[in-house]
Length: 182
Ligand SMILES: CC(C)(COP(=O)(O)OP(=O)(O)OC[C@H]1O[C@@H](n2cnc3c(N)ncnc32)[C@H](O)[C@@H]1OP(=O)(O)O)[C@@H](O)C(=O)NCCC(=O)NCCS
Image (tube, rainbow, N blue to C red; front, side, top):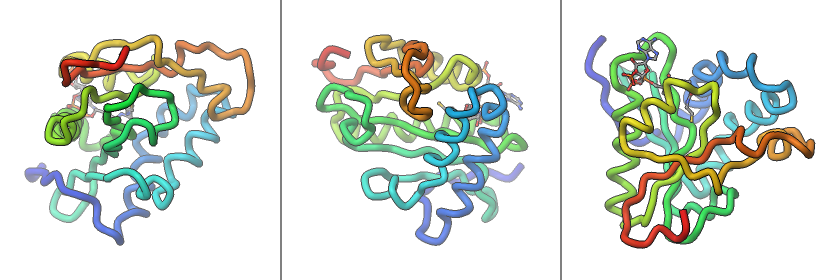
């Protein structure tokens, strides 16, 4: 494969990125409970809403978008009660045909660099038990589990109560001296 350029998403690429996010997460939709799969799918394609408070980056190989990540400069916009002073990484995704070439690592690295530039105290994210490749990648890059920020996707996406709080797994990469209780 030709070398990928990591850059900001352009205005007219939102639909392509939404398609990529669905394609990359197809494997997970079948393992999520149906209400979570449906809520998550609706959320990830809502590029217009996300772009009000987040920056979307893409991996571009000769004009083809094969990867993406979303960076929130203010963790408060993530809606998961992160402590103040942090940034958040969301929706890391690489096209199944382009995996294993460290694009996921480069996209995550870009968010870490951005968070350091922004002087964020931490970079937080949520993932799930079945996202094994992502979890390995985050741990390799220094993220650690932050169980006090786990959430329940059944309640969050499906509107049901009584799910497993540990299912929406929180991780943080600590960057500042004060981590605000993360
Ligand atoms: C997680 C994800 C972004 C990783 O993308 P990637 O570009 O393959 O990542 P990298 O090449 O940097 O490496 C990730 C790991 O997955 C492995 N991997 C996953 N799929 C692979 C494939 N098809 N071929 C080769 N290696 C693969 C890599 O070897 C590497 O393993 P290691 O950490 O043990 O060395 C990608 O698997 C993905 O889009 N998954 C679905 C969406 C998802 O789960 N996102 C996370 C949301 S929190």
